[in-house]
Amino acid sequence: MHPIVKPLLALASLAGALGAAPARAETFNTCAGFIDSLPATISQQGVWCLNKNLSTAITSGAAITIATNNVTIDCNDFKIGGLAAGDSSVAIGIRAQNLQNASVRHCGIRGFEYGILLSGGAGHLVEDNRLDNNLVRGIEVTGDNNRVRRNAVYDTGGQPGSVLSIGIITSADVIDNTVAGVFADAANSSTFGIYMSASGSEARGNQVRGLAATGTGGATGIRANAPGITLADNRVSQGAGANAKGLYGFAADTFCTGNTVIGFATAYDNCDYSFGNLPAAP
Image 1 (cartoon, helix red, strand yellow):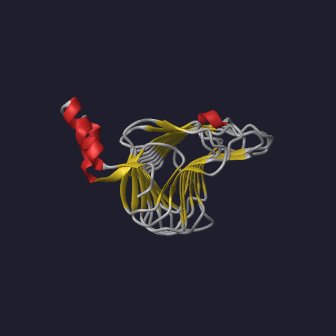
Image 2 (cartoon, helix red, strand yellow; image 1 turned 90 degrees about the vertical axis):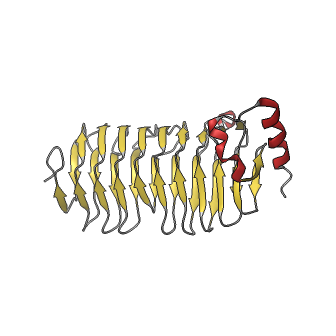
C-alpha cells in the first residue's frame, strides 16, 4: 500500500467521533484508501478518495498519477490545487497514460497546465468535476470508448506564450458539460471550447461561452475534427474575433441538429447535415 494512504480504520474512528457522515461521504465505504498529500501515485486498483482539500507547488509532473488499470479518483467535492506553482507551471492535476478504465469524479482542480490528462488506453470516464484557472487545457482524454460528462470548466488559459487554449479536448462522447471562459494572450492565439477527435462520437447538451482569441487566431465553440461526429442540442455563445466559429465540422459527415449559436462571426461551418439549428445553418 502506498505510504500516503490511510487505512479505512481511521475513517471509522472519525465517523464515530463526529456522528453521521455528510452526504458527500456516502461513497467512502467503497474507497480502497485515501490520498492525504501531493504528489501521489496510485498503483493499486480500486476507488481512491479525498477527505480534505489538497494543494501542491510542483511545477512539473503530476499531482496525482494513476499508474494501473481500473482506478477511480473520487475527490468527494474536495479540491486539488496547483495555483502556488504560478502561471508558468507545466504540472498536471491528474494524469494517466495508456491505461484502461481510469475515472475521475467529483474533483475541484485548479492552477495546473492540464487539469485532467488521460492519454491513450480506453474506457475512461470523467464526470461531475469542476476545473478552473488551468493554464492550457481543462480536460484532455484520448484513446477509445471514453466519456466526459457533467463537468464545469471555467477560465482556461493564461500560460505565458501559449498560442492555444482548450476547455475540453477529447476522443470521447462529451455530454452535458459547461465550458465558460477560454483565452490565450500570445499574439495570434486560438481557443476552442470543445475539440472532438473520435470518429462517430457525439457532443450533446453542452454549454460553451466566452471564448477569446488574438490577432489572426480564431475562437471556436465546438470543433468536430473526425468523420461522423454528431453535434446536438448544444448552446454556444460569445466568441470574439473575425475568425470566430460557433460549430465547425469535419470535411464530411458532421451532423448538426438542435444547436443554438449566438455571437460568432460564423455560426456554422462544415455542418454537412443540419436540422433545427438556430440561427439556421447553411
